[in-house]
Length: 251
Image 1 (tube, rainbow, N blue to C red):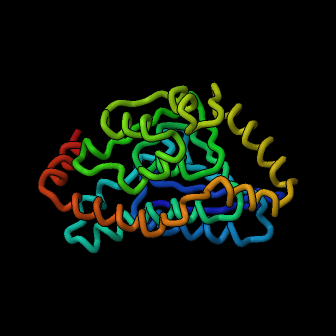
Image 2: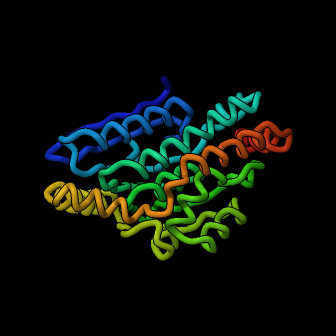
């Protein structure tokens, strides 16, 4: 597999790290592993709190893998691919442990979805965000509910409509996506470590119940995100989308 998902456990903190050489993009294999790892961490009694991060220092996550998008040639394959994003979001939603997001660099499309699916997200000043899906003929259908839940319909629609425009990390903080924005990775990591240690020493049952309350009203997301995956899976087969993806890849 061209990429990886790993987990390390230290003093009650489970750190999940994903990597892909193409700016931490997310092919199907990585998505499946990520969903599985989050779900398993949720049932591991040695883990009290989870940190979700990616490798490298430039890009947090470039979203969907263009190589895989181009290779999709039927509706079932398309639906399955976009269901990978749905499965990761739902795994984070259902996980009984609080998840801290670590966003060190730019987040695009599905990367914004990941940042929205965690419970508390910290970032650096370099962590600009963009929902680029409309620019390639699709739309942020699968990640949309998670993003909308975090920043509201107005801010989400701004990103979805102006699909080629980067929004700054400070903008994302002002809208509620990020809780803190740091000047450096070192400062961010220190802040994450401090919070993670506090949570690892907190009452697990109280945190589980808090998370349950935070996510009230999303119980239908298994069906909703599956439906949205079908929408994206159909659109990715269109000539418009195929041509747009090829143009992006050739830039």
